[in-house]
Length: 509
Ligand SMILES: Cc1cc2nc3c(=O)[nH]c(=O)nc-3n(C[C@H](O)[C@H](O)[C@H](O)COP(=O)(O)OP(=O)(O)OC[C@H]3O[C@@H](n4cnc5c(N)ncnc54)[C@H](O)[C@@H]3O)c2cc1C
Image 1 (cartoon, rainbow, N blue to C red):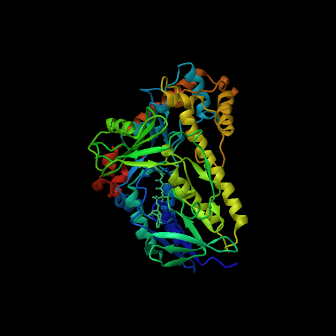
Image 2 (cartoon, helix red, strand yellow):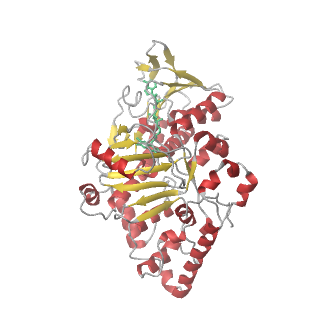
Image 3 (spheres, rainbow, N blue to C red):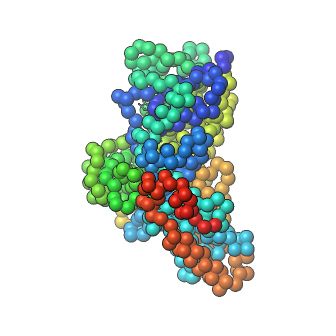
């Protein structure tokens, strides 16, 4: 058994450079050597540009300044996702990184809101979310700490994936990471332990290491091609298996949210960056051809195309083990959940944190690997269930893709959550859930699934009083939105780099 002295990261996409940056920072001043091997010939996937608020934590853990990061990656702010046509064509709902409304007498908002809503005495749930209203008005401001419930929200970023990897590459190398630009031919295994011992480059050069992080993308050079770990497929619930990506020129207004537009056999993303818009169609190849998908995508794009369309094949699911022998799979090498809720980069971050928690002392790491694998599988399954919900609850008619989604048999874990909400109005979550109460609520309400029951205390409230409270919440939100700058204005370097000016644009508590 030898102590871990050298960590080798295979691949320099988003996952590889996030891992290199994180471990270089966390192990600074220790004898651990970190090397990253990447191949410009193979390149990176080049998509993956919408994030969730956890990215802010990742950047601040590294000590990265938000403004500098945004300038270097052409980033924009993201308040949530607009889902167009998912429930029915011409209907839309918004999933904000935010709370809805406020408690009344310690009863969560959705209990009395749903009660009034079923009697047509409350507005759509969007009316009670400041983040949603900001997004719908193309506005942005940073949330205030310690804000009242109705003013609480969070935000994430859209960024250029290529620029992000370059930025982290420079950061990591400043922290002492060795970067090797080369193509790996194959890896060799120790005959006794089965561990990976060396990478053999196309040039014949050898790179040895004690522990390897496989960030080689879908192929899984170490985790699959070398260790044959196996893959758990989830296509029975998530039928999309292809995507076409096609960037286009920016519109005049830069929205502060991602758009997910339901299409005939899947959905289309629209991710606004400062210098361009990322577009793509995620679809089921069982339902339409690549040519049909491209035509549908092009029809929905505004602006001029900036590159050739890029076709990507994928299989939704996860590796049977994320950590196998002395290899930890990260990013696309570890599995893939389609990008509907921007969860992949978040899972990279979660897996990096998990590996740091369970970081091996020696190459003999089967027991800790088992714990890490269990934790990560649960995280992944929770995300998977949340994404399935988007497909399952649709009420579109006359389209084979969407009809099949309505009729699928969903995982029991998801069925249990739906039933619990439907019959008790309860929304539960724990540490393994990234998506919390407000996220589930935005989906349920977006698909018009309201509980048949609410907390009994709601019946004791004076109804007129509750109606007035809701009206007050709505007005307070509208007033707050009215005073705030457009997202475009907020991003404009002249204003955005001026801290005093930005401070004025913070929300009232
Ligand atoms: C259509 C689509 C849309 C997506 N959208 C989002 C999104 O909005 N939000 C989100 O969070 N995630 C999204 N993702 C996921 C996101 O793109 C990935 O999680 C992220 O980019 C990480 O990719 P990666 O680094 O694992 O792989 P890659 O970017 O594929 O990098 C693989 C690396 O391995 C190297 N490599 C491979 N083989 C060798 C070899 N033999 N020798 C040397 N180097 C090698 C390559 O050169 C490259 O550097 C999306 C994914 C897809 C497919």
